[in-house]
Length: 440
Image (cartoon, rainbow, N blue to C red):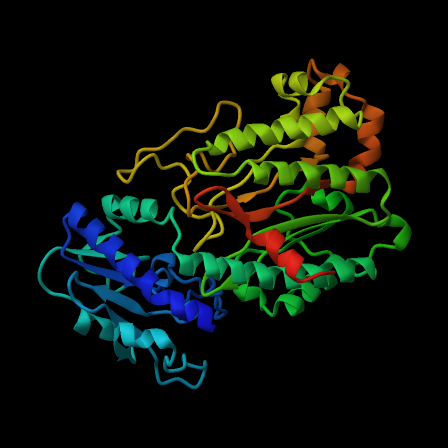
């Protein structure tokens, strides 16, 4: 952990403790146990799945790669960390913690996961947060407690924001390396490897599977196949990369799209980039996030009209639902300990939710924007075969210039995504700042 993060961590931990103390009191619990989770073995095999830590544990401290750890918290007492460090020669045990945060915890070493029972509270009402395991006790994942904790996570501490700022810098390094590989004629798989090297991550450390899409593959929203075949120069049209990085368990989520040869597709990318920046400029406290989603549809509709894909004005394109063919997903989501972070629909700490706007089933965030929220802004414009086929069979087919649309299918589509933190008076764009700090 760098000096900046180390200086911010104590205040973050105090906020985490205060939030948990209040949540435990409201839900009627006396103590809390948080389990990191275990490593799982593939069915009928001895291969291990990559370990993904319980986000509730890494909220407290930056342990992201050690299973079978536990946090035991009783309000009014120093939190206890049960740190798993077996005697093992098949796999390397975790190193003994030496980071600055160790003084904030009473630390007990576990040689076996079942040793944790010796340190669990035995009186009072206990809440246990984590996946089912052999040492679980008390009430498992009580919904009232989870709702309160998830709602509180909507507002990030300075430490959390700094972690995501760092994750954006690491992600941008990978993006720069990936674009260079694309320009040099690499395959999707080779571009993926360039990203890993540039961002200094293994595949297991990525916050989500990299989307590395050449040409029409960019029309698959979650394309993760990583084709091995290099595409000849005359057949290379476009490159979409959606890839992030992690710092202390906090994620970045960044998407960029490139044209191989400029041309009208390059102009389309520039128009989408300009529109995406307008959406980011609309971010400030008091704005309803679904309004930004609707602005994205209006922006895509204007581009569809200006470039001649649809023979209507922008208002008519939106009104007739045509924009949803080209932008079928939501414009963004909360980000933090999880790439799609919790509480995107929560109206309050009791678990009540805010419904999605009619006709927009894939929007992941319906909240009113407040300071210290962090989310993505990621409009897209795609040429997706099954959605275009539906449009062609609809009453609105006559409104589309199909010859123009067909000429762009080979590009797949465009998505541009930044991570944005809301300030007291506006916003700070973590992704654009990272790109500005690392010129091409």
